[in-house]
Image 1 (cartoon, rainbow over the protein chains, first blue to last red):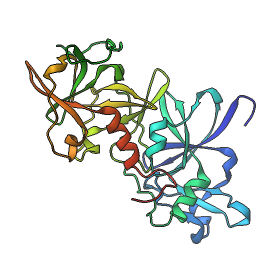
Image 2: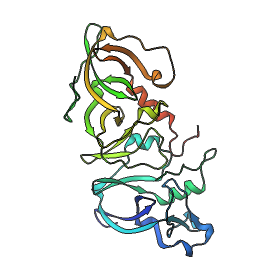
Image 3: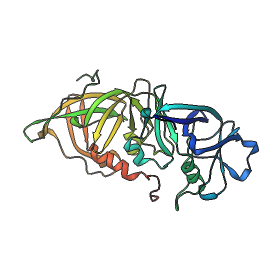
Image 4: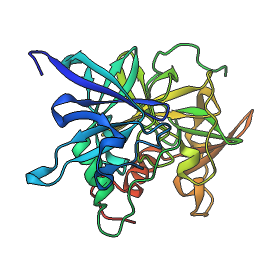
Length: 138
Length: 170
């Protein structure tokens, strides 16, 4: 993050484009290079088509890294912080995932900003008595 | 009454008394005519492209932007178990403010404002399922029957029925 701008990594899962803050990302890699046990897919972001790329996310407190499987990494965009909005209060109150940290208006369309550590944690450790968040369909 | 053509807010109304007329905002949902208190509606907007949210309940088909503001969309049909309301390019939504929530209610069609003498409001049917659970009254005008929704209660029910992130399962 520099000044009044946020650096966002843009990536695609299925037909949809998402963003995440660059600081959550350790590196970008190929799925084929990642240890199978480190791959995370089937998240609430939806199903992948090509599952070629992986976004490596640090584990909290010295755990192993996780690799979120995505279809494409589209690059980094520098976005004025003024264009980043919170999720509407009603939406935040009813969705079953805490992995959406906000929205950014890109080309006049709301693009979801995903909290990658939370997304991965929800996939790997669903709350007791609950299933993992349902996988969205494209 | 013809559907509203602008995005201006409906006329506000005062408190409802038995000898007064009350303004309601009427829309069509899955074959029925429903209305709620007009002052809840801040504007009528054309629905923009929806961005779906992960792990969203069926009654929240997504969010969209209107004049730079991101609004959550509420599908009442899904909430009451009557099936989804079809979303088309021509779909418009009534933006309602049921404190503290602000949502865009979609419908199959917006009729706009209707005036109902309060004395003509009848009690809702005794059913307690589906849409009937959220009715506060029933009225009739030249076009037929209008079911009056208690919209704040409906929106609050939507919130309480959903499982928020980190909340207890149902």
